[in-house]
Each structure stands twice: as C-alpha cells, then as structure tokens.
Image 1 (tube, rainbow, N blue to C red):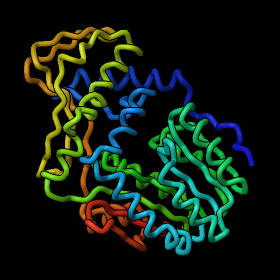
Image 2 (cartoon, rainbow, N blue to C red):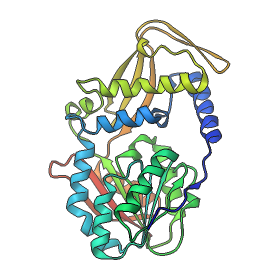
Image 3 (cartoon, one colour):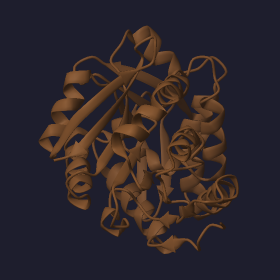
Length: 321
C-alpha cells in the first residue's frame, strides 16, 4: 500500500511567522533564549542524526534497547489499531514497534506527525514500502498546536519518543500532556520516552561531545536565522556550552559570546556582552515517580514503566483514564 498524500496543517509561511516571533521575543528577553525547534533545518537534522551515533550520546541507544525488549509487550497491552507518532522525524526506532504490531496482526494505520514536509514525505514512503498492509497517513503539523487534527476511531497509541518531552519547560509540558489527553478517548494509550536523572558526569558529555558535533548543531540555529531572516550572526563568535542545573534537574545548552557581539535581525539591534549566554535548549531529566505524577495530573494512568539494563532511560506506557 502506498503512503497517502500528506495532510498539511502547517505551511511555510506559518514556520516563517513562528521563527520571527520566537526570535523577536527570545532575543529581547533577559536572559536571551531561543527554542530548540529551530535547530532542525536539513543540515541540523543531519547533525542530530550524527549526534545519535556518538559514543557519548546514550539516549538513543538506551531507548532503542527498551523498545527492542518490550515492543511485543506494548503491542499486547495496548491492542492498538492506530499508531500515532508525534515529532516523528525518520521514525527509525518506531519500526521496532511496527514490527511487533505486525507480528500481533492488529495494527491498521500509522500516522506520523512532523513539521518537516521533506522528512515526512521520505519516511512515509519508506514505511509504506516496508509494511505493505499498513495504511500510512502523514500529517504536517506542530505537536504543540495540532493535536486536535489527529485521526479518531479505533484504539489509538500515541508515541512521543526520544526524550523530546524534556525539551518542554514544566508549564508547557503540563499543557502538552493535558492537550494530548484531551485529543484521546478513554482507553487510548500514550507511550513516552524520558531520559532519567543520573550522574552529571554521564549526562553532560552527551551534550558536549569531544568531536564537537553538538557544538556545530547548537550554532546551526544562528545559521538558520541568518538565512531565513537576513541576520548577520557570526556563529564562530559563540562557544557551545552545556550546563547541568541540579535544582531543576535539567541540562541547558547555551551559546556563549566569546567577545562583545552586535547583531542586526528583523528590526532589532541585539547586543551580547562578552561571556553572555543565549539559551538554546533545556533537556529535563526525570525520576520515575515524577513522570508518573505528571501523567496522572493530565488524566493518564501509567500501566508500565521500563528502563534499559543500565537504568539510563525510561519508557512509560500510560492509558487515558
């Protein structure tokens, strides 16, 4: 079965408007910040794929180990007819679940949702070819805005993998989980991957690798702004920094000005003092009991929680109450 035409709820002009708004608000704030979604142009996506293969970057391998060990459990427990993946990207790890559901013979539809038309077009075509009995329906949208566009009917399992939930600040995370629950019916399911709290000596190198790939990925957001908004950032004037915040139990990626920097972007003149930081990402780490509380507050009941053998990464399976 070939993939269906993409269902588009996010146009290029929407992305451009969002970038302008985020840049205007974030670069006018004190301290300055930008959201991490603007890393991911074609080059940024390539760099992130490279990051996932680095020896220091454990989350992808650890989550894959959990899914490999428990995909059949997930298929049996949920009995889902429709699999929905938020922020799907290449859907590479998702194939472990698709294989398990294929073995159990229950799944009819796979719905990946992503902001990238090109990424979705490629991944939906590949999955449709690999799983010829599966209906593949890609949705171009933002998981923080378009949950109401998810398909209805049948028992659904929503996937939110990769620890991406940790990129949301606590209030945004609560709003996202509540909106996800509102989009589901009682008895539907959510599978969410969360990086776990551990020794910062393990966490920090995952965001500051020896080869400098993460540093290049971090500076890519400046190149995106230069290209899309005609800004004049000098990316090499900023040093990549990864900082563990023990109070919030999250890591922050920052770009630190190596010297005084003045940037013209939109109608703003933005000045950075030497040593001033621009925060580009928060990546929260979780404790098992903490994510269970957050799921419960949004109207989910966690039915299972698994980790990899080293206890680095957790996957929660929760039912909409």
